[in-house]
Image (cartoon, rainbow, N blue to C red; front, side, top):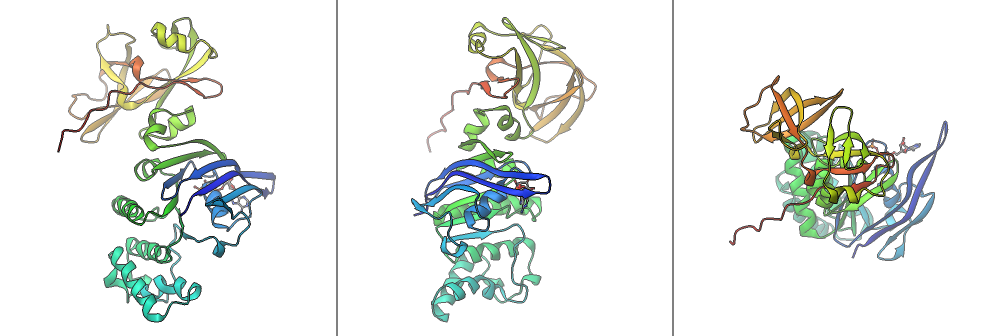
Length: 375
Ligand code: ATP
């Protein structure tokens, strides 16, 4: 079992200019076998949280429990967790076999033959059996990362902790290793906490994601829930690539007024804003922006500044006032830089945030999910 709970976990460092609150009253539960991704911008407290869980940092206050046992003040080796870091930290003068088996040698009383069996099973799982007698210096980055994973897996811990384990790999290998780690985690069913600043990794790998900012938890949920139903503007802007577009507006009856356009709301949307402040922010994802005729409802006239054809889609950049916005349109749409167009933000698809607190007041409506055809 491996149900991990953080209760008001807080870590304060002494900085030269005063206290640095790296982790601020974090409440997170990771169910047994779950894959949780901790994601957020640089300095938001991800690594510190992971290091507190591993026991590598003393917590300032709060509690960490594993299967309801309080482990807050236990030593790292008493926690039954294995950690994989960004720099693989392999022993350079040991072979892959020795690197993978080292932890077993010092923490268990398994015989040499038993240890060798476990090493070979682990190597097979990671498809590195042919590398067992090589040294780390002879391996590629991806192979070294597999050895580092092997060293963690062989201990069969209750919890895996991974801190940006793929960031030293090139983009293609990262994608492959992402899938492999997910597969491995599913097969082994070990509770995993994975730290990354890369929202794509978070979206694609996690059963759940916890988005942090300034040491505080912003949202904890399934990836698509955070994507479609962000609780605030920070989450909305962080999750999704290219990012959601934001436009500051003032509410005036049934109209949202921007310096460059007026956006007419339906009475239903208007009524959902009745308690909101006057200053609001419209959020619209690039894929929800439409190119429309000039007489369409809420059409905004603009000029395409730059286009980036990606194949399946094309990113089209345009300006409203001094700000640049991004639309993601079908790759076969004929459009070039310099084209005068009208864009529209369909009301069903806009998000509305409180202009001051950033709290989400309205999220986009989801289309009915199409059922896949019967197999
Ligand atoms: P990154 O993605 O850049 O690694 P992160 O989200 O993992 O960032 P942390 O490394 O956890 O962030 O750092 C959180 C905050 O705590 C930062 O402001 C950092 O400067 C500060 N911090 C981290 N470790 C220490 C330390 N040992 N002493 C003082 N301040 C620290």
